[in-house]
Amino acid sequence: MARIPMMAGNWKMNNTIAEAVVLAQEISNHYEKEWRECVEIVLCPPAIGLKPVLTVLEFDRVRIKVAAQNVHWEEKGAFTGEISVPMIEEIGCSYSIVGHSERRGLFNETDEMVNKKVRSLVKGGLGAIVCVGESLAVRDEGRALEFVCAQVRAAFAGLEPTEAHSLLVAYEPVWAIGTGRTATPEQAEEVCAAIRATVADLFGAPVAAAMRILYGGSMNPGNAAALLAMEDIDGGLVGGASLDAKSFVQLVEACL
Ligand code: 13P
Image (cartoon, rainbow, N blue to C red):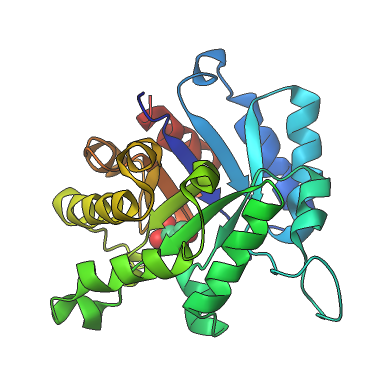
């Protein structure tokens, strides 16, 4: 079965509620019925913007989903500042991003924490967009494939093949994020193919063939088509270029 591409906009810590609603409305205004079956569209506003953005999308009856950028693994408790899977589920989120390199790098998230978050999302019936990616130093040492595949194994540890249908991987080389320096399609494909082989090893070939693997890192309307043409790249997780409705719509169209 062909994999339906996903185009996800990770807004990071951008957009107040007022700005988030305007951007969601602009994207919704461009919505085309033909997108329905061809591409899965996901907006990832800051937590505070999830509900307002979803309200816009539901009112317009467009098939655009929302995802949290992060979530805690416990359901509730004394974890000041955190939000849980049942909370984002109640809002109407379909997914959460997990293990973004900014969370790993700036907030000391470990592979073990990423694994707990993925398992909590699976338990709660939500999807996980699991980010992996190597630094420039690791790439220059020639260890990119080994490093990224180890991150995938750690993120998915303890999960059964039957639990894998709601999982996605986003390959985001750290050196390409927000730098304007995109991985070449061949570089990205090499890693995404290795990720798929790792998933096959963990969960079996049918699960690997069905799992979507996204690319992220300075993706924009100018370079998206070449990346998306690669065999093992099934969409994008886009930062900067997702903050402008016109360019995000162009990215969605690049998936068709
Ligand atoms: P940019 O598209 O701004 O490089 O960000 C990529 C990213 O980190 C998406 O999660």
